[in-house]
Amino acid sequence: MIRTRKALLGLLVFLAAGVANAESYGSVKALMMSALNSPDGVASGIVEGKEADKIHETTGSSDPLRGEVSTVWRYKEEGCSRLAVKLIQPNTPTKEGPKTDFTLNYELNICKDGMPPSSTAH
Image 1 (cartoon, one colour):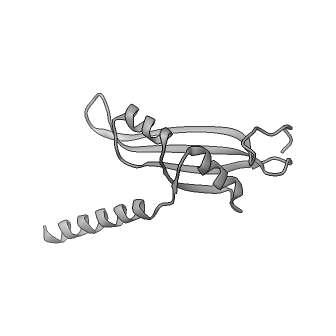
Image 2 (cartoon, helix red, strand yellow):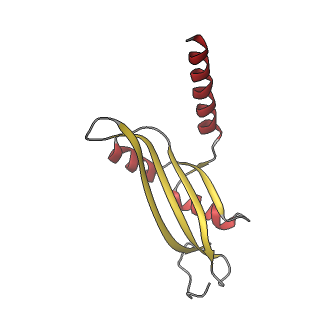
């Protein structure tokens, strides 16, 4: 029993450290720009700011909002990509009672200037 408690405590400390060490972004757009500027086309971290506040308000969970962005493909137009965005709000209450992860997935075409690409060639 003591080993189980120590193991559980160790796991909780590890998970808390992972969130504490995650990079923070002031918006989903900042996270997407990080992926566009990354050599491997990916970025992840904690999203803060107005968007996160709105999701916290909507879901009823105060846990940090995690964001993951990956590049689906790069356009021939310099600095433009199709990005897959995943937002995860842990510990969201459900109508049935248990908590679950609320996840929002979407894709969009975006360039480093914040606008969509002018051509569709990729």
